[in-house]
Image (tube, rainbow, N blue to C red):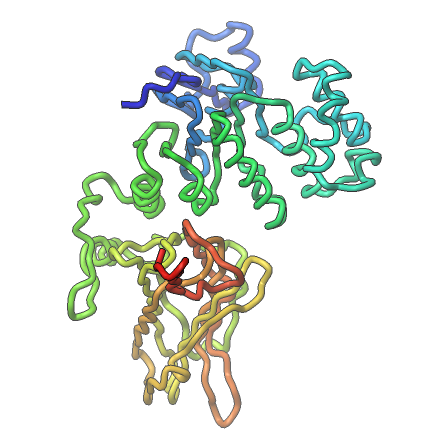
Length: 437
């Protein structure tokens, strides 16, 4: 039993918004001119309860619109709840939105004093903390420039430096770290660890599940404003993956497996009966698609090692990419390909049926081929883009029959990253004073 003091207590929290179809209905309702309800009720949060104890780092995860940011804004006093109660025991510092509370016409230095004053510090106390703030932000002479000239990276550096250097007992962070570069993020996470060692409390919302997995003691999962579950990071992240592929609780039976003959059982086969595989994936709405039209990629999906169609993978797990092609003309030896890029568009790896020395033979109009590429996910934690291709040689000329650039993303969750794009998957043995440690 954890006997540490409860420092954040949320009880039966609701946040309801009134959605009006017409602006005049909003006015009539506010003036009490109608007896009937002129709005639809939308609950951003519904009966959510949670506790955070002193010294814990607690993550909150969920899809867009699940209520993550809303609950942080209520905890920090930015929003008022419709119903329920929130108790906070300790000085709280919030980093919810880039530049929130900054005056865009002021310099960075002037904003340091402005925000410090808003947080109850005297000018002398801010003077004492100034060097730590400026060293952490590390934006050089830009501290003397107007904030409106800052890049988003400079915003987050200064905002985070302010938030963590006002001696908070509770630090609340909402997605702010996704803007800084890798070195700044590393510095922030070191600060997280320092905070934890000092017995301080962190409440952390992020789509970066690798960071959630690595740094959080406990994770809370929200879905459509409802608290689904809470527990250890691995357990809740696995549940979140199922939320991402729209599985109901009845489908979370743990029966999804890959059979000995390589066929996929469980949710994959069930979802196939529901329609197109790609309808169960998050797709890029602005992907680049082109080709000759002689053949096409009909369908595709990514399948994890439990047989679930998903965009999220655990580093080290086996996964498959399935690509279904259909031929609208006679084609000899078509090549089915996939490639993976990082977020900057750098092509990291890929393969195709020709590289794998697999012959697709003579394909005739109406034929279909399904290619399944199976491998272990050894990319570092982060987001990647997948492209698919159907190409070949026709009349001696290289021909693109159908190509889907950056058609879907893969989010890789990792609790251990190394240098570069790929993990070397090393086994390291240490011998100290003649003894293995």
